[in-house]
Image 1 (tube, rainbow, N blue to C red):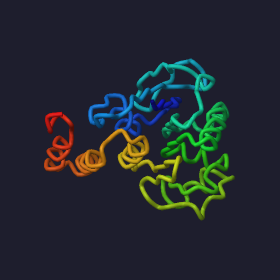
Image 2: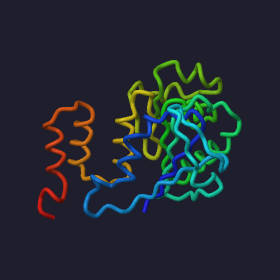
Image 3: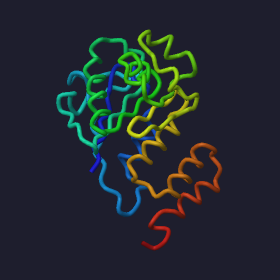
Image 4: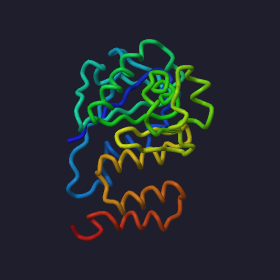
Length: 212
């Protein structure tokens, strides 16, 4: 079973987590033999946070409650408050995740936070466009590993820019292996284009469509 820890912090960018959390929590398109996925929100404290959209989230736990193993996944969303020193603890935990083979997934402002700690210096990654990480993170030295793409998966590190949330979700789902390959491709094509043929293709890939 995968445990997906979602780090929540004030000004969290609600929309960046929408696709991936909805699919992993609902399991509506999971393949027949997919293992269960447990989603847990964690904060630097147990106090509630307020998202950019004005939603209040009470964390399920804190960083101390997180287990680091190969079936652990850490989602780091964008936010305007990553410069707060309180988030140093989760960035240290992200380093432990990467070293242990657990998966770290960061998007938008969270990539700048990883860059500032040196975690992107020797790993393929992306962010909000060329030059963003240099501007946001004075300690960043990973220019030669930067790829100008919406989202980039490099083994157990998946990074994305602010407009790459859908592809980021696809790559995370692929990393967990909970969708059949054709389901994932049809899912991505439908949400990327809105074309009805991809929706019908998606429905046809599900076990119920084949009488299973």
